[in-house]
Amino acid sequence: MALKDRIHFLVSPAQVDAFVRENPAAAIFKAGTCHKTNEMFQHVQAQLEAREDVPLGIIRVVEARPASNRVAEMTGVQHESPQLLLFKEGKAVYDRDNWDITPESIAQALEAHFHRVA
Image (cartoon, rainbow, N blue to C red; front, side):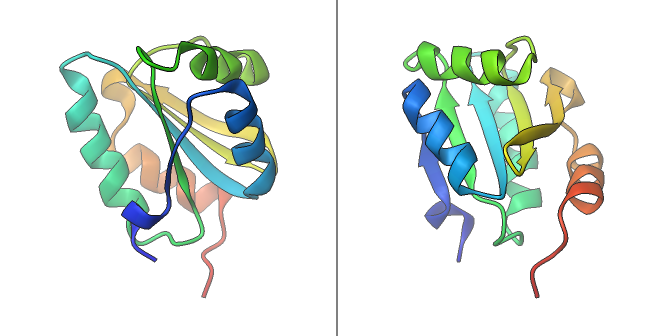
C-alpha cells in the first residue's frame, strides 16, 4: 500500500490516542508553517514509502493544536515543528525535530525499532 494511502490527518486528541493505540508501529509528523517543514516531510516520505507496516499520522499544528498538545502530553516530548515521532506498541521510541529529521536518522530508527514485514 502506497504511503499516500496510509496517511491519517489527526486533528483531535481522541484521534491521536486511537491512531497510536490501533497501530503497533506508527509515525506522527507535526507540520508547522516553518520553511523547514516541506523539506523535512520529503525525508519522512522517502523513508516511509517502502515501509507498509508504518502508517503516518500528520498533525497540521496551526489547525490542530489540541492534537499536537496531546502528543506532547503523552510522550513528554516538547512540541517543535516540524517534528517526527515514531511509536512502537503505544510508546514513543524516537523523536527528532527541525534539521535533525534526516534520512539517515529516520532509517536508523526504523531499522532499530521495527522489524520489516515480509
